[in-house]
Amino acid sequence: MSVSTKRSSGFLNDEYFVVKKSGLSQFQAMAAYLGGSAFQTIMDNPITAYRQLVQQYAKDLKGNAVDPKVAQQEAKAIFRASPIQASLSGVGPRIIGVGFKRIPKFGILLGISFCLDEGESPGMVAAMGASILSAPFINPIRMIEKQQRAYFKQTGATKPILDIIKESAAERFKPLFRGTIPLMGHSIASATLGLVGQPRLQKYIQKEVGDRTNLGRTMTGFIASAVVSPIYVVITNPLSRLEVIMQTSSIQGKSISVVDAVREMMADSAKFGLRGIFRGQGIGIAKAVVSLTLFHEGRMYLQDEFKNYNIRNGYHNPE
Image 1: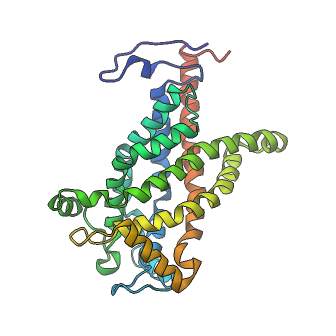
Image 2 (image 1 turned 180 degrees about the vertical axis):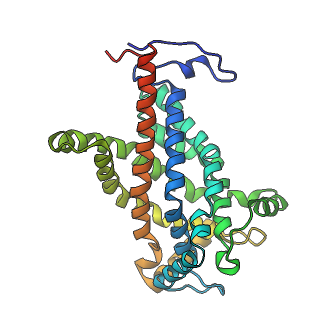
Image 3 (image 1 turned 90 degrees about the vertical axis):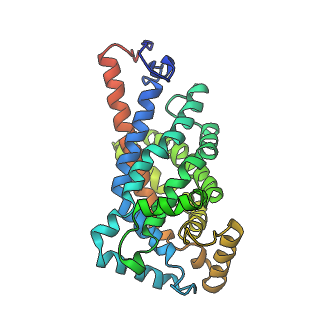
């Protein structure tokens, strides 16, 4: 039986801080999701940066499509020349994005989930709703993140965030919303497979395998991530590529539409086969496995801490 507690909450309803029968309040569930996301964001940034460069260098400076192997070599050359700067590129916007991107997404996700009495374990309805409704909040951060790395080849340095914002302001901030449509598709796949599918699969693996072999939560989580990630990457890699095409073009130049981005990707495929569409897929699978595992480990650790706190202080009785 859970114990309800009233707290001063400002613009949030007191119910937001009430501990539910799952052992967590909606506020605590939100904090755990944000904490897990921040941990994952910092740890997987080098892989994220490398993957974008592999996809971005699909064309040379003259606009001609290049072989995927050449793009990989150029991305590796950037990391060899400036390993620390390249690894940390975009981490600032991504950390800020934990607030600007994840608060809307996780807020909507958990809001729908708690309304449906699913608690901190959201279902497909919550995942779909959060993916679509949060896209306009998330896209500007992703655009800034990609613009920071867009000119590494020419300058050898990240583009200052202030310069990106100034250029966008001159265009009434419209460039910050480039790539919103592919982002929605990407976000739906991410939420349904990563936020809903992985935890459910992990519970199944823990029940069927972990309890018989003494595998811990971390290992069963890693196995679940390894199963989900290839499916996730096959679905999202083309969408991610569309985002990169649309978001790494010059802010001051003409924007690239979804149709034009698809045409460019199809032209790449015609020249290099499936390798043209799935550039960066190998590193994408590795990133997805690492990212999902880190996120859920961080989230579950914080959820356990909050639940133990609630039990110690009499806010929740697990019996």
